[in-house]
Structure formats: C-alpha cells, structure tokens
Image (cartoon, rainbow, N blue to C red; front, side, top):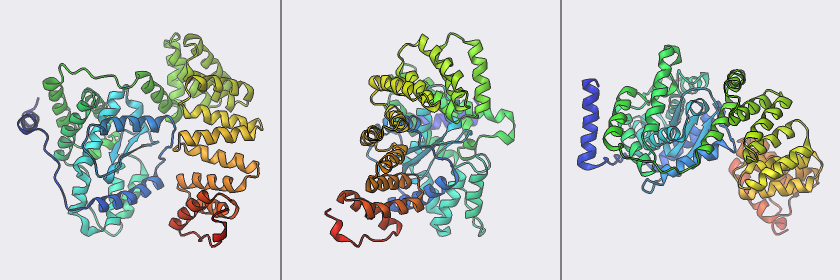
Length: 475
C-alpha cells in the first residue's frame, strides 16, 4: 500500500475506533431548498434520460435500498430509487434522497451485495448532504442554474453521453461555472458511513469493493472509456484501500444473513441483460454460452428472453421449453413463456400458461398484467378490466396497467373511468399535455365524486380549467 493511501486509511480507522462515525455537519441550506432543487433536477433528468418504469427491476432496487435505509436514523427525506437505461457504469444521488443506478452498472454486477454496496455509498452521500454543501457555497449563482449544472455533472458529464453535457452546458450558457463533483474527503466519508450502513443491514462491504474494482478496470481500455462514475466519484484507489482494510480488520468473522434468495438477483440481472442490453451483443454472447453450457437451464432461459426481444419467438419458445424440462414448473420461466406466447399471438396458450404461473406467484404483478392484456386481445373486456383493477389495487405503482385499464373501459363505453385512468397514466409518465386532455374529459363524463375531485386537484396543479358544475360533485 502506498504511504499516502496507508495514512488515509489509518486516519479513518483511528477516527472510527476513537469516536465512531462522525455525524455529518449541518449546513444552512434548508431541507425545503434541497427538495426544491431536487424537483428541478428530476425534471431535467426525466427530460434527457430514459428513466425506466420496469415492474421487475425498479421494485427490486427499491427493496434493497429500503433494507439499507432501515439501519439509518430517521431521515428528513423520503428516499426514492430509480434506474436509468444507459449502458454506462454510473450511479448518483441528487439532493433530497433520489438515487439513480444505470442499467450498464447493474449488468456488470454478479451478486446482490454489489448493488447494496453502491446504494449504501450513494445513500451516505445524501445522509452527509455532500451535494447540499456544494450548493450552499454557490447559492449566489441561482438555484435553477445550479440544478442544471448539478444534474449534468451527476449524470456523468463527459462520460454518460451527450444528454448530460447538454444539460450542463445549457445551464452554464451565461458563463457561470461550479465544481460539484465530490471531493476525496466526501468519498471517504461516504464510504465510512456506507460500510457502517451495510454492516447494520447484514451485508458485507466486499460487494462495494468488488464493484469498485470493476469500475476501475474500465479505465484500462483507454481514457475515452473512463466510466462516468469516476468523473464524479474520485479517489477510487484510496477507496479500494480503505474498504480492503475495513474488511481485513472488521469483517473477518462477518457472516452476512441472506436477506433475499440469490435467485431473485439472478432473475433481475437476466432482465437487465436481455431487456436493456445491446441486443446484438447479448444475443451473440448467449448463443456462445448455450454452446458452452447446454445443461444450464438458466442459460436457455436467458437465451429465450433475448430471442423473444429480437423477434425470433418460435426459437424463444423452444428455449423456454428446454429450460422448463430442467426446472419443471419454475413459475418465472412459465410467466415469461406466457409472455412470449402473448407476443406471438397464441392467446389461449398464453392465458393457460400465465394463469398457471400466477397461481404459484400471485405477488408477481406481470402475471396479472399479461393475463389482462391477453383477455383484451381475446375480446374479454370485462375480465380484462377486472384484472387491471386488481393489479392497480395491489400494485399502485404499476404505471402501464392504468393505460390498458383505460383502454379496456373505453371499449366498454365507460368513458368517465376510461378518461380518468388514462389521465393517471399520462400524469405518471409526465406527459402533462395528454394528462390534461384526459382529466378534463373525466370531469365531463365521470359520475364518481372521488375521481372528479382528484382529477380537479391534478388539473389545478397543471393550471387546467376548474370544474364549475358543482351540482355534479355528488353525482
């Protein structure tokens, strides 16, 4: 270990031994200011990036984040976890507890502890309010300008594509500039807190160490491929040295408690790879993997998923059937086989397969969703609507269900509810123009007082017309 790195690690360890983790400093920027800045940044992020609403990946990422948050004292923010569809190694946190991880980084992971490690570190940045500190020092620039600059930098200026650069440069058009990347001290403090949070959550710090090594290895391919993560999270060598020392000194006898069946991570990873990876790269890689490991059912499963994505559905069905011969009645393979039958227009087979899967995993929202979609295609509109209603009651964050619920109700001439649910869908996808149109139609057609009241509230926030016909409120 180099002398400087050794000194940093020893210094950090001494602080922990003598007094425990140092509480983050309190800065004069208020929680409300931080939340206002976060809203502006979120609008920019959603404008420039594909923030996915995947019903399998996003809930899983949130579950891991919530497990880590359970070890923290009460927080002033409601943390939320998001996934950006871009094949880069990056993760970042905005003020007020919004944490983003990229599909490229998720795809590079091999176990849940790596995801937990990255998320523990990003949670620690929010907990320590590192971005807020930089904002407080530069408030004279203006909150809106700062939001744009911070969003661009955190998204990976120079490393995460043109969109981040556009956000940043647009905000700096007036000649303003600010350095909002984390300092080495910020990074080491976030690691101190991060490994503490991980340990309390029964995760080993080895996951964070492993993913940092993977991020570092990217730099070996040339400066043009330096991961965006390293642009905003410096001192990776110091961090690796510190975490290694932590593990050696404190983690020798640590045995993590398995919180989640590792198969859940494997399913999520397969979905990230086959739904969001470069389809030709993934297809080629899995073709080779099937040849190398013909007895592995999960390889056939993953190969079937990518074949379905590229439109080779008959081959995909064959691969799923091979997987099922080796993992009979695996409900998740059954579910995805039903999905492929649906895509291929084999609705009777799709319905039978999906209902079998749903009987085994009633907690899985996609089973209900594709049963509803299949019923719609078969013309069973009432049954489809019932499925979608059941879905949004159990899983209110399943955004796509609102669209198809609205469509199915519209075909049954239930116009008030149809417009209402379509309005909810467009609100959730931030398409405010269409949301306004649908909600105004809901006010016109809906006899349901509660739905009318909610529609009016949303319209008022968007500057929509007021519901002047008060006589209908109790209808």
